[in-house]
Image (tube, rainbow over all chains, first blue to last red; front, side, top):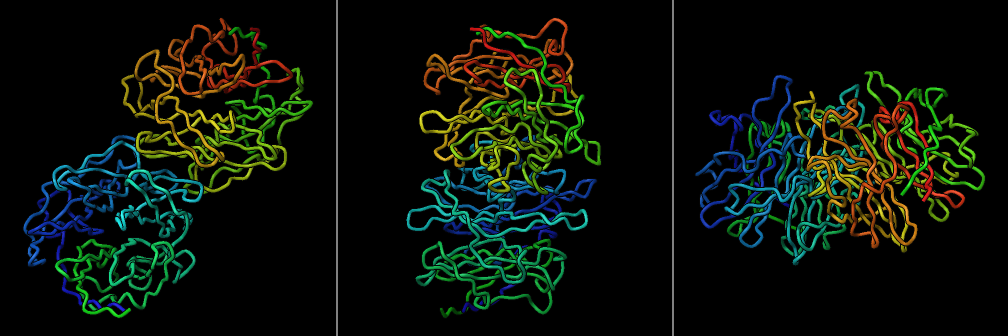
Length: 320
Length: 317
C-alpha cells in the first residue's frame, strides 16, 4: 500500500496568458532531473481555432530542486515544432516522455493527426535534444512506433524507461472506436515494447492491465518506477463514454510486477484519490512518479484532465 | 521487351457490380486456376456524402481472355471498421498463392483532414479459393515509419528463395502546387522482405531512380522473373496536372535486377506506350504481370485511371 500526501498544485497554465501557446492545459508531466533544478515537461494548448479544434505542444517549467513550489523558468517556446503537412504529428505533440542518453536527451511523444470518420489518430514519434532538453529535433518525419494488425490505431501516451540496460516503452494502443451517435470515442489499453537501442522496438503485443470498471475501460499514462525490489506502475483509467464528470472520469490505478512483463493490478494500493474539493476534486490522471533526493514524488493532473494544471504528492509510506 | 496489345477485356459499366459499384475496374490482379483466370479489381461506390469507396470485385475469364465466365456478386472483402486504415477503400488487393492458403495484400485507404488520404498495407486470407477474404487483424502489416512517413500502398508480393518480397510505394511529401487546388502526394517505390508474410523488414531506400524530376510519382510495381532476371514494370507521372493532361499523366516504366536488391531503370525497353486514339490513348497505369500457360501477360488500366476498365497485352519477346 502506498500512502501519498498531496502537497498542492504546482502549475496553473491559466496564470500565464502572455504565452499564446500555453493558454490552457498542462498535461502529462514528465521529469528530467538536473543538479539545481528539475525540468518538468508537459503538454499545453493555444486557444482553439475557429472550428473549436486544438493543437497541442510540449513545453517545460524548471522547478527549484530544493523547493518544488518555486518555478524558476518557463520555456520560451514549445520544445518541438509541429510536423509537416500530412505527417502523423501535424496537429499535436502530446504527451511527451524524456530520458537522458549520454549527452543527449531523447523524447518520445504522441503525434496527432486529424481524420475524417474519426476525429484523430495518434502514433508515437521520437526526437533528440542536444541542448539539455530545451529544443528537440526529429530523426525523421514519420513515427518510431506505428500500427500493426493488432494495434490498428491510437498509439499514444509513451513512457520511456531503461531498466537493466534494456529500453522499455509503455504506451497505449487503441482497440476500437465506439460509434457513439456520430461522435466516435476510442477505447485504449496499456501495452509495452522493448528495444536495445531506443529506436528499433519489439512490441509485446498484449494488454498488460486487466479491466476494472468495464470491458471498454480506457487506460492511459502507464508510469513505471523500480522501488523496494519491485516494479510499480501507476496509470489512469476511466469509462469509455460520458466520462467528463466525477463519476466516470479518470482515477489513478496501480499494478506491480517482478519481471516487467506480468503485471498484477491492485488499485487499492494506489493510495491516492480525488479530493473532497478544489482543483482535483472531480478527477485525477496522468501520474508520473519519480525519485528525487531520496524521496518519491508523484505529479498528476486534476479536473478536466489538466486544463487547470498539475499538482504534486509525496510518498509518506509504502507497505508491500 | 515487346508487348502486343490484345485490347480492353473488361468494361465495368457494362455489368452489374456488387456493393453498389458502378464505375472503375482498377488495378487488375490475377489468381490462376486450371481452366480459368480470376481477375480481381477495385471498383467504386459512392457513400452518403458523395465520396468514393473502392471495393474489390472479380471476374472469372477463360484462358483465351475472350469470354467472361462469371462476375462476383457478393462482397469479396469487407471494408475496414470505423477508424481503421482501410475504412474508405481497398485498392489494390494483391493476390498470392501460398501453399494451402490464398493471401490478399490490402492497399487500404482512409480519409484525412489536412490532406485527402493516408494508406497502409494489410493482410487478409482466403480459405475458399479466393471467393472471400478475412483480415488477420484490424490493423496493417506495413505502415508509416521513421523515414517513410505516410502513404504506404500498392503492395505486390512474390515468393523468391524461401522469402517473401514486397514491392510497394511510400509517400515522401505532400506538396502545394500552383496547378492544383489541393495538396498533392509524392511517392516512390520501396521494397521489404519477410519470412512469414506478416512481419516485414523494410529495405528503407528508394528502389527506382527518378526520370522526370525529383517530384516524380512512381506507383504500382509488378515483378516477374524470366531468363534469370527480375523484371519490374511500374507507372510514373508528373506530380501535378496529371489527371487530364496527356503529356503529364501515367506511363509505364521498366527496371531490371539480377539480385532483387539493385535495380536498373531503363524505360526504353518497356515495350508498350499509349495508343493514338483508343481507350488507352491518354495514360497507362497500374500494370500487373502474370504467367498463364507458358506465356507472360500484362494487365493494365488506361484513360481516367481505369474508369472504363482494363486491358491485356502479351509479351512477344
